[in-house]
Length: 317
Image (cartoon, rainbow, N blue to C red; front, side, top):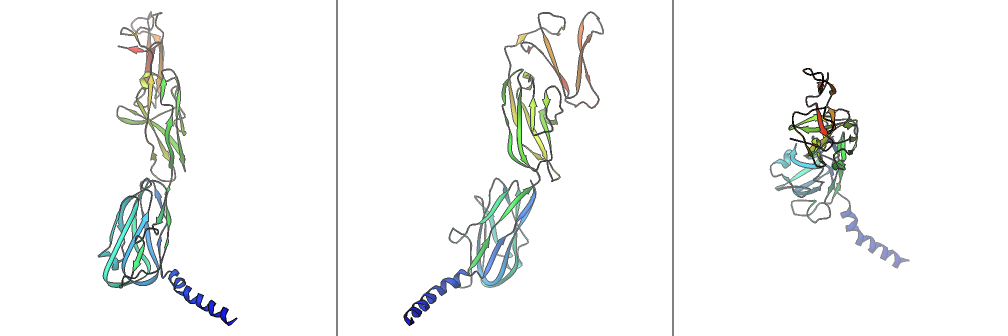
């Protein structure tokens, strides 16, 4: 029995240094932070506990597609003179040293400022030697714990950028779709004459305020047209999606002479109004025996409203 007690005492003595070393004297915490897409958020880096230190090395991993490093703010005065913080390869690197030990106690060391575009974990790199270490004046590593966190984008968040069948034949239909979280409203737009204009539901465009934009009986006039969607959520500014381009291939055009006549039995014309235009075939004001296409911009029509005219085989000049 005495022999067993001696072995037990020896085991405890051998384990004692490990037990003492495993207990962190201080804890470094990266706080959670959130903000609207495009906002600059502050991630507080705080210390809990207390120690006399002469060097600090920190490395915090983040996702570059979701966060963009801006800089630091509100650095602890005791650290501000020799504090160096930058970012590279999805890692915020912070370093500080002093020939004179500084006693640190519970409080904020500094804030990391980031532009938020999406959600990202904030993970301390404790696996790489030297990346997350705190040392005293003698160069001895001080036992420390590190608590990771998350950065969160609030409001609408695009999961899938606009997608769909973008190459179609004239006269056929297609649809573009977007997937988003936290969305409360959608507004599809089209690039017309270098300006993004909001679409309205009409004979060509359907579901302009939904996640799915329908394009019906597309004409060759829409070939090369770009589309995007504005997505609203809990944040003041709408999130703007990437653009998607529609390519419409037409059949072999049928040459026609201008001015166009609506009384030629050999050519069948069609017309499509968009943006709030209203068109109708009516007798010519100068010759009641001829028909003309009368087009009117209705009240509330868009500035880009118009009418597309095509014969069966297409239209060329």
